[in-house]
Image (cartoon, rainbow, N blue to C red; front, side):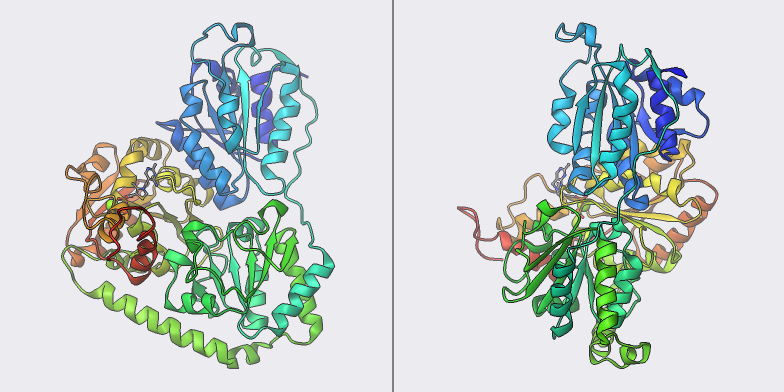
Length: 578
Ligand SMILES: Cc1ncc(C[n+]2csc(CCOP(=O)(O)OP(=O)(O)O)c2C)c(N)n1
Ligand SMILES: [Mg+2]
């Protein structure tokens, strides 16, 4: 069968299982839009800035493990994607971008919107390819999916010169690209690592985004139970084990709590699963890194990740879920697996339960104090009570939303693949603008995104897209009238010389919400928090997105001040006092 190349691409996207594409048109890419028009079962989500198309595709990939697809036009349409694609590259999220480009026939002549976009995307994708013959298009589109999904997932960029897209190409039976493969680890290395684990006194497991991507939920939980093994998670690993499981102990670095800090620093064997120990988790410094004498086992699908931050004694290349399955079967045959009764009676389990209960009591104490302005923790804890167990959670950049007083350590997550978070690229607004995609993946679950006031201002142009496509999420702005995370550095390191970090003029967020067809409310007093969440949920139930603007203070938890003070004394002229 012969089809215009633009339409063939849409047929391929559909055959790859994609049901939604995120985009904004321009003349160069209209043949793909025509393909969507003619193809049933592929819905186009029209964003208001291409940045949101990349971010929604990344959010979709985080929740499903499957590639999100963006369709944008040439030049500025493509360059507007850059930050979101960079996030997906650093966060190992599969995305396929189909972008317009000036015609091959007018290349180098100053055609409208013509720049070397394939080269712009080269360092932030697994593969960036400019196609220069129409008949190559079906094969390249298939390869794009193969590469985005395969090995360590990531984004792929396909540059499509406009003159190729209307040309007819042969399109017959299509075999979808392979899904992720269950690559096993080297049996000897796995055995050595398991022996180290079995003889350890204080082992822990740290799960990251790679563990989530491979779907290693049961394996992580089983290992936790048969070995009384505490599970820590990076930001992207959140949800791999329910937070009310007795072995779920918290995060790392700025996301840690007193218990996870203690377990991490005193561990003698650490199994890192699909996690990188990057700067925002470890500062790469003592006090945030494991003890130098600890045995480190690193499980990663990509051998290039081994030893990037911490040199492992046992670098195991393989799919996280498969390798953990190998470890589990060695543990089972060793006769050392704990029974359910032995787990309940285990000393470590009792210690962790006690420590977690103390953390909960302290968090609840702070959360229930009625302060003016409100403490961010009051908002976060009330949100957990108002929203059901199965809620999709977004955690954007910013210290209030993310770690310090915020969502990461003290918001309980119960479901795997239920969180959307930034990678260590930390692009403000990345999560908030991609967040409506949560309702495409889980239409029946409420969706709640914590975001800073500064970050939200970067992406609030996307409210109409959520309304238009009936994606009723709730954004919860933690409004401290500042770029708080950066202001903190000026507090602790630059002698409170504040410049460029206080937001003296703020939009009336609730009114902006209303003006865009969303429910909006500004909350200044603690006693109004619960009611506001109930009203937002009700609006969502009626199909309306909601925005809650919580006016909060600059309060910080211990892990924040510990984390930010590491900058002290590192630059000439810095104030060395806290
Ligand atoms: C696009 C972008 N610009 C600048 C930064 C640097 N930065 C990191 S956090 C932050 C402040 C975030 O402010 P807000 O969203 O209000 O959250 P808060 O820290 O106040 O809780 C800034 C400016 C960034 N990460 N991304
Ligand atoms: Mg702020």
